[in-house]
Image 1 (tube, helix red, strand yellow):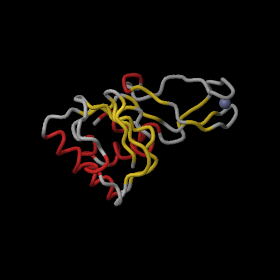
Image 2: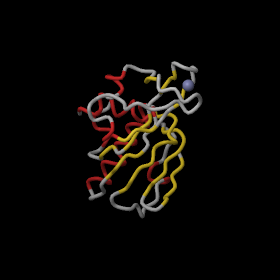
Image 3: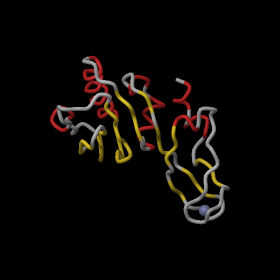
Image 4: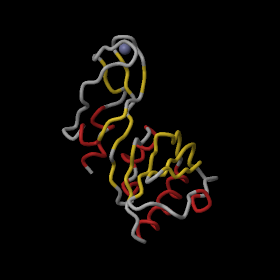
Length: 149
Ligand SMILES: [Zn+2]
């Protein structure tokens, strides 16, 4: 995992697993609230999840507020599976795997949580063919389960 501070955002990239050293990778001078930009996290395994929770719970206990931005599909999976993954933070926006019925393109648009509050995605246009006949390539209700937590 790589970590880069960009203003009030901490941009995380790569994989989170047993080789990830949070203490050694994340800078000490985190802004508060700290926006975690998670669009670049491709994979996180169960040990990575344990490390993640251990590290952020400690930060939150000492007063840090977390906000999750542009969470990748790998991260959304954890929002849905692991209750304590958020460590008390708020989700601002997240990616969802979409497929176009017009041209079969697959892409991962970013949605703001406030735009899916009613449990369904707003109409969007395919970036390739412009069709709005597209849908999430997962079970919508399951993918959005974290919203009702
Ligand atoms: Zn299309």
